[in-house]
Image (cartoon, rainbow over all chains, first blue to last red; front, side, top):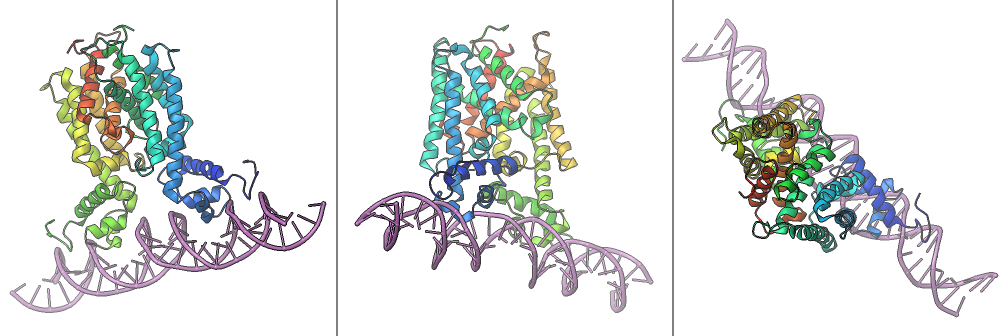
Length: 206
Length: 206
DNA sequence: TGTACATCAGTGAACGCGCGTTCACTGATGTAC
DNA sequence: TGTACATCAGTGAACGCGCGTTCACTGATGTAC
């Protein structure tokens, strides 16, 4: 699979990250173990310590990469004027869901592994960057709302993030709402649509 | 603490549930171990097996009780006509947040422990009951929306649940949004307010 | 091009630990007479 | 009321297991001459 260029294994750091992702996807964030990841990469557990300071460090690296990908996806979704500002947050919601689907291992490492975002400065920075993109999109959108009744941008970016996250957690996995007869995409799109109407950004009958 | 009436310990089943809750609250849902719970109840790990079939069974019982309390809280919040139907979902959001705060151990067991709701029929039933109360409140509220543009009740109860859940997960704990300078209560109340306005259930300038 | 040496990625064995679970037991409690 | 017995909640020791981490090592790779 991975090209064995360079030294012994070639690129064990990368291989370990990929192997760990597969383990997380299969066993869930709780069942993730350093030994499994090493075995899955065809390597002794001790070899991991050549590239990571330990289990948490490996997990943090995966989460960090997740936030990078996440931030890029959000940046793409909010677009730089290519998409009407109005539609930005609908696209954002879709992107959130798509990210959780396309990168389940990263997603779990970021949001369900119980990792502390402050333990690792690189991780904290990546998470901050992702949030900043969200908030910037909200600020752009904010200008279309009549001043005076305009909620702080950080506030309604929090709303969109919360609803997106809630839909993923509750309706895109095995949680209690799972039996609701709607696709997560439809729930989220309709929810954000209603919310944006409430902001006065969509006509009442759209 | 617990009255030592009756047999040896008195009421070990209850004591174990309470001890397990404390362990979960302190160590998080991942760090929960049967041995810790037993030790915290002042009892040998093996004693647990007189009352539960194993670790997962104990965890499931806690989650089950959580859903009972949760359902009761939701039923109280939605009220039976005592509160204007309009305000029902705002009260619901507040109740969701209050529940997560007041019963963190139950909440973690229900939503963050990775437990399968279908493993245990009692648990599945309790979760269903909680969801049913949510949906019933949505149906009552639904009658105030002009038919034709009225989304299915299960749909917008899903929206409220998702936003509430997202706010708790992201802003009521150590997750990425935590640095947003708003109280979770304010985020949720304002979010639900905007959403209800979008449904046409609140005046546009409320 | 060939040889000697230094580097260091990955090995393999070992560690101590806490875990969930089992099992024969014991002794306090409840019950029958 | 008192005694003999049955019950069964909790004990204590033991198990096998997988875990994260350490350490001295080895042997493939890169480098200097």
